[in-house]
Image (cartoon, rainbow, N blue to C red; front, side, top):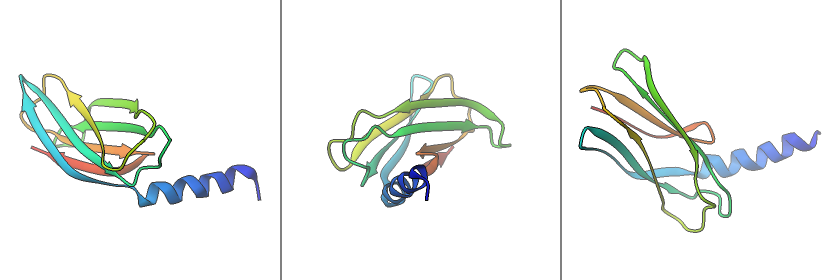
Length: 105
């Protein structure tokens, strides 16, 4: 087997164990904030994250992309923000391109 495939298997095992808890969607001064805690994130690694903010019809309004700092403890807090949020919106947070949290209003 290729080297890359075994590495991908290791990463996907780590990723599949990761979940999110205490997800909240809050509004302050016209901006929406999706906050969550990553559980069982791979220690010592920076996790690539994205948030896709969509209209109720599914049109992409905005996307955030970032990497966490290297994970050093369980229940790792992270969040994404949408400025000038419309009244109705759906948001999906992904870690390693896998949905870990979602919300809507």
